Structure formats: C-alpha cells, structure tokens
Image 1 (tube, one colour):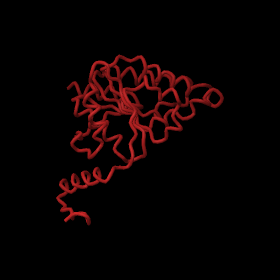
Image 2: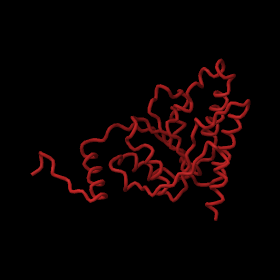
Image 3: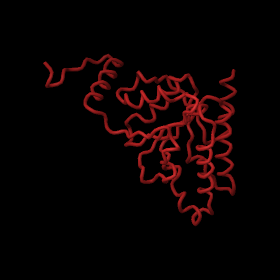
Image 4: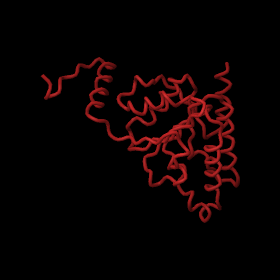
Length: 210
C-alpha cells in the first residue's frame, strides 16, 4: 500500500521515474573497485553520491539499479531533459517539485543518467532562454550540495565530461569520481561465464588454455 501511494506521488512529476529491477552486484561482472567502495560508503550517515564517467554501455546505469537492491532502498531516476518546459517559470517549478518529492521519499538511490545532456546550454542560458536553464540547474546544484546526507545517494553518469560544467566535478560534490573503461580481459571472461550460465550455453576454452 505504501509503495502504491509513493508511485502515485512520483507520477505527479514528469521528471521522475521509479526504477524497479531485480539486479544486484552479483549480476554485474567486474567493476570490483567501485562495488567495494559503494558497499563501504553508500547508506552511511555522511554519504552523498558518486559521479561515474566513461563510455556508454559499460555498466554505469546497471550499477545504480543494483545498489538500490543491495541497500534495500527504492530507486528513482531524475530525467533532467524532462524538467524543461515552454512556459515562464515552468522549468523552475518542475525541478523544485521533483526534488521535494525525492526528499519526501526517504532512503533513495537517485540515478541521473547522462547528466551532461540535461545541463547543456547552462553557460549560454542568459542570452538564449532568458536564464531559465541557468536558474533551473542552479537550483539543482544547490540541492545537491545542501541536502541532508545519508538519506538520498545520488549516482550521476556522464559520457562526455567536456560538456559537464566545472562546478559539477568539484570533489566536494561527490564521495568519489570513477572512470569506466571497456572491460579487461579477465572481466570479459567473468561476464561471458555469467551469461553462459544464465542461458545454459557451454563456453569453449580460450586458445591459450589447455
């Protein structure tokens, strides 16, 4: 009943989506350093969040969904691109409403996928949209810095760090910043074994194995 009530509240914001996934860290091959860090940090009283940089398709979004299940928390996604509207004041109201809902939800993992796309144009906002983007992103940045620690753990992913404003990469914003590259040979083997077991496929030994 509580979950249904929360879902109805979340649906009131076009920028928020409730993520439901059975994934856990055991379903993600590799990424041992970041998984170890999240186990030690996420959910602690002073924890705030992490920024995950890297190329697309290497497990950044999966990690956010799995972390929520590891903690036993709910998972929400904030779609920054859905915040902006055509009416005067609509965008500022939308981000404020979304963040109030996040604060009211209690213990939450908040995923912001490809955060740089939602913040695009903030530097030139004063001359292109009357400052709407700048004011909206400033409200989000203030919330990111001032929100109570330990209640909402933010996982932001970014594919193009050059497009991300410098104020979002400051060390004080995040517990840590991780770079995600293509999996190593050992990680690829682990991933292949995981999927082979899932789909009942027998793997042939590598050429250098007996």
